[in-house]
Length: 264
Image (cartoon, rainbow, N blue to C red; front, side, top):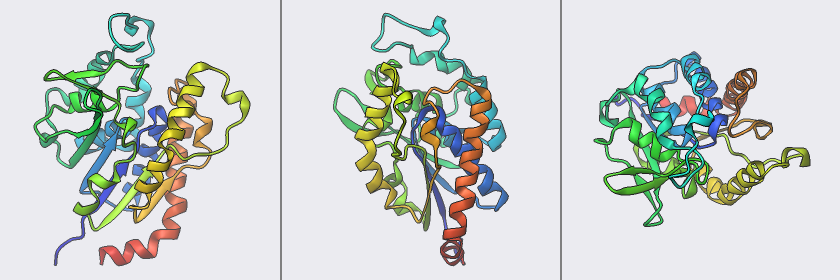
C-alpha cells in the first residue's frame, strides 16, 4: 500500500508567520507529518526550520532571538533600509552551509527575480540561507539578495502563498495563510510602514484566494491582522503562535473526515 503524501504550504507574512509554528504544533499533536513543504518569505523560514528538525516551540524561540531591526543593520548603500545579509548569522547557526537538498524533508522556496519580473523557484542545490534571504527580502525594508549576479526580492511580491508549487506532488494539501484580509481599525493604520504593508497585503489578496482554493485544508488565523508584520513584543509572539494553534484545531474539526478519507 502506498502511503498518501501530505503537503504543507506556508504563506509569507513577516512575524505573523510565527502562527505557522502554532499550526505545526497542532499537526505534531495529531501525528500529521507533511512530506513536502512550500514556503514563501516568513513561510520559507518556518518550513526550513521544521524540515531541519526544530520543534514548533524551538521555531518560536528562533523568531524571538532575532533582532534584525537593530540600527546597526541599517544601510545607505543598498536598495533597502536594512541589509538583508544581517539575518545571515542567525540562519547560519542552524543551517550552516546546507543546501535545500540536504534537508530531511523536501522544501520548495520561491522568490521574485526583481530584474526579470518573474517568480523564481530555487533548485535543490541552493544554500538554504540564500533561499531564505532571497524569499524574505521585504521590498523597501530589506535590500534585495544577490545570488550568482541575480537580484532577488521577497517571494510574496508575485506569489505569497505558493500552494501551486506542491499541489501536484501531494495527495492532501494543507495550507496556512497568515495574511487573510480583515477589516482594520484606523488606529492601526497610522504610519507609513503600516499603510505600505496593508497595501502590499491587499494587492496580494486576489492571488491568495486563487492559491487558497488549491488547499484540501485551509488554515487562516482569526484576528491575526491585529499584529505587526515586524512584531517585536515577545508576549505578542506567543499570542501569534497560539492563534495558529487554535486556527488549526478549529479548522481540523471541519476537515477531519476529509483528511481521514484521504489518508486511508
